[in-house]
Each structure stands twice: as C-alpha cells, then as structure tokens.
Image (tube, rainbow, N blue to C red; front, side):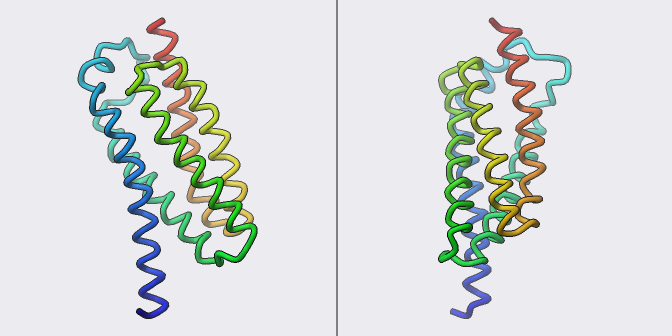
Length: 161
C-alpha cells in the first residue's frame, strides 16, 4: 500500500471513529428523544429536532479531519501524543453526555458533565493548534455548538426542576 493510500485510509478511519462515537451517543438519545425528551419544557430557542443529526454529522467529520491532520505530524512527537490523548478524552466525554442526559434522564448532572466536556474541547483545541493550526481551527465550530448546547441543557434543566 502506498503512503498516499495509507494516509487516505487513516483519514477515513479517523472520521469513522468520530462518527461511531456519535452513533454510540445516538443509541442513548434514540431511547428517550420521542418519549421523555419530547415531554420536557424547552426554551423558545430550542432548535427543531431535525437539525441535530446533520449538525453533529458535520461536527464529527470535522473532528476526524482535525485528528488526521494531527496524526500526520507523526506518532513519535510528544505534542501529537498529548493532543491525541486530549482528543480521546473529549470524545469519551462527548459520548458520556448522551448517556447522562438521555440515558439517565438527568439534565442537571448532564450540564455538569457538559462543562467538563467544554473544558476538554478547549484543551484539545489548544493542543491541536500547537501541532496544526488548521486542526485546531476545525474544532472551533464544535466548541461553539457545545457552548450553545450547554446553554440549552442548562435551560432545560431549570425549566423542568
């Protein structure tokens, strides 16, 4: 296999890993979105349900591309290893939020978890930026969406206490 083929395969695998993380989170969402979540009071700025799938699909793709740009710098680099460790941590926290919010049906605990995710994304952006400014920039839409999600999560929690 040529170096270019390996590079493309790595890109595909990283994007698929990120999409799979979204799919795992989606398993928790699917069990509650049409029942428990539908019955919750939501703020007026709550987006329509159909928007979440496309937005997350794009964000997970951007995350995969960003990780690929970092991986391309070489596994032997301490900066790459640190950046990827932070990336894995935030990806796990991303999946965990769905489990807490939808699976446990606990918006309050999910909000606290989401704050940890937000910090982990900022750390990942900073570490990615050191390795590849483009990789760091690709995660900015993600942290912006999670910032909005935090406001939404908090509002839902407060409205349904």
